[in-house]
Amino acid sequence: MMRVNEIFYSLQGEGYNTGTASVFVRLSGCNLRCHFCDTQHEQGTLMSTEQIIDEVNRWPGAPLLVLTGGEPSLWLDDDFIDKLKRHTGKRIAIETNGTHALPHGIDWVTLSPKGAFLGGELAPCVLTQCDELKVVYTGQDLEQYAHITAAHRFLQPCYVDDPALRQQHLQACVDAVLAHPEWRLSLQTHRLLGIR
Figure 1 (cartoon, rainbow, N blue to C red):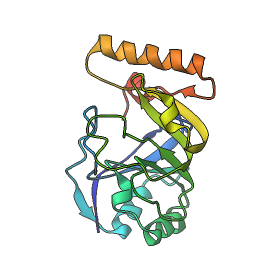
Figure 2: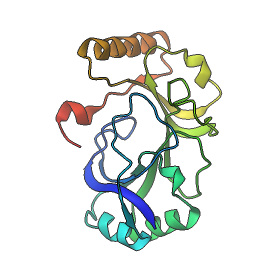
Figure 3: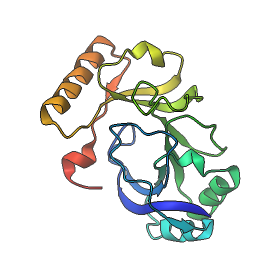
Figure 4: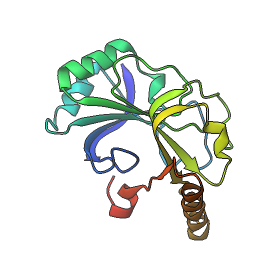
């Protein structure tokens, strides 16, 4: 059994897979307390692997299943990932803060380390390899991520309620990508579109 906050069908709004029809499985709980976190992930319903698979299979045409949170690695193991793959036929992606080793069989790892932020320093990032590195950016030194091997590197402006500060974060991302073109800009397009 694992605690599930929600399971829903939408478009991936961020990073490399932006625009891809995806089933999101948001697992409850996180080992960090980042001050900017926009996810109410503490509540949830205990669900069995079979119940999760049944819910995911409500959308059989979706090519991607995204495990997110909170911090989904708190719940996952090899058996769960194997069953998801065998019984849904979907590519399995994860969005993780990288503070725990991941089970085998995940097809796409989005690593978003949070150690540079208040509340994000509670546990160190242990992952050093991923498919995409997605950094929530407020202007921090990018050199701290140089040791992470990633096929794709994204800077995403830190979303805050204050419009002026939000614009500052966006401009900082644009300036950083122009200065460091090995990075790309990632916008939260689901916010722009008004979808989940």
